Image (tube, rainbow over all chains, first blue to last red; front, side):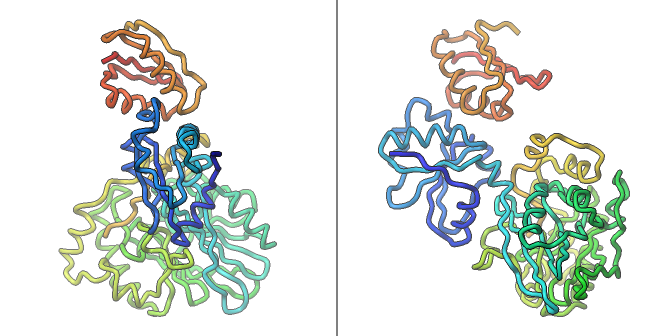
Amino acid sequence: MSVKEMTAKEVAKKVINKDELFILDVRNESDFNDWKIEGENIEVFNTPYFDLLDGVEEILDKIPTDREVLVVCAKEGSSNMIAEMLSDEGFTVSYLKDGMKAWSEHLEPVKIGDLTNGGEIYQFVRLGKGCLSYMVVSNGEAAVIDSTRKSDIYLDFAASLNVEITHVFDTHLHADHISGGREIAQSTNATYWLPPKDAEEVVFEYSPLEGGNVVTIGNTDININALYSPGHTIGSTSFVIDEKYLLSGDILFIDSIGRPDLAGLAEDWVEDLRETLYNRYRELSDELIVLPAHFMIVEELNDDGSVAKPLGTLFAENHGLNIADEAEFRQMVTGNLPPQPNSYQEIRETNMGKITPDDDKQREMEIGPNRCAVR
Amino acid sequence: MNADKLLDAQGLACPMPIVKTKKAMNDMETGQVLEIHATDKGAKADLAAWSRSGGHELVQSIEENGVFKFWIKKG
């Protein structure tokens, strides 16, 4: 039997299509418990590779023969070895090319919809980390919002659509992933917009993004209206695009809301968060399609792999928008918070330009789940 | 710290540092200490977990100029 290679992109397709897959994850137990590949019809079983060096006999009865089997590790080497061992026992198995490293970085572009005067909006779904970023395209121009670290993906995508990136935005200073915004802006000469209240310590030039700013993409008046919406960070800004889409950053998610503590000021920002969610957002049209910067669980994905829902639906269904009592709300967003994202302080400093870790270090800092929300 | 044997696993990628450690351990006596030098970052958590599951004791681990050094006492 031969061992096949499966790419992160192929795994992404299986998650989105809800295909059946059995994953043997051979990383150590603590890495596995921290973070793994998830999907509705994906079954995952963990045994560290170093417990299988003498042979795979003891796990053979765990490996199904009625489904595809994928062996996964951190970088690829160990999964390749275990896949070979299973293959020698007569199983047909694959290993994940470049391991969880590739899974963490893979982006799946999904078209969200057309814009009124021509143009489209795309969502880039980072399944392995739950990050969502966006590209708005109109008449030869493009804007990138909340980009992830691997900037070449956006540059290549823009090139494939034959459009030029002219504006780059971050809705806030990210704490869970390294922004590719500055790199994209530098290589395309685009304007890089950051909310000034989040950018007080940044060491590079940017354009201050403030409530009321209107930026036009293309010459077909695709307006990006900035809406100051503090809470997750003091500078957090939402965008309304084409009067139809609400990019909510890390303030409002599909099934949860942003956490206010990642810059160390939970108590101070609870009221801003409540004001944004319970007053400012209430003034917006129920029909706006909410496009957040994260998802937490694969159940938040729509059938086409996108993460999007009308604001009206979220007002009805999102628990975080339905806590009438202010004290109870305060308790929910400041007490019982999940652990903070891995390396979040270093990630914030990298996004400010204060430190410049090498590529390997940056990749390592980002490994793991995002944990930007409270439910 | 004194070791009975030194294993140089620098430059090797996962799973080789552990594969070599296991091999070296097989030739040692209970209570003897193996010193391992590795550069693969993944080796850190994996060697600790492997020692636990194999009944060995990870006596000490340090990082020096990008090299991870481990001392494991055979159990």
